[in-house]
Image (cartoon, rainbow, N blue to C red; front, side, top):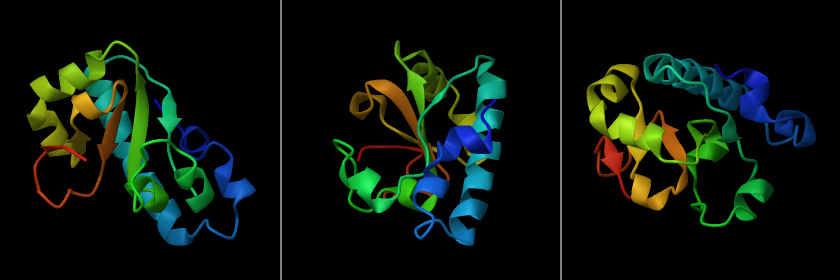
Length: 128
């Protein structure tokens, strides 16, 4: 299970002027949903990337300019062998029940990206 501290990685204290109540509320939702995902997957994972302030997002290779990480709506979990991504693809019903969307594993080698807001396509599994 992941905690608030795992998700924020101290960035809420490092960048207090960017942290907001709205980000905190969004983070609580994704933490709960990710923990539901990890319980269903039945294997712990660490957070590679949770909330990203603007400077961290800009310095993150391949990150979207308006990444859902910046608003507390996304989480990247360690997935070095791709087994979590593969499990998610085989259990889209679980993602739907949890209210999570998955970035396609071909774009996330080494991590699993999930978010609580649907992408523009509305597809449960999407390409960036």
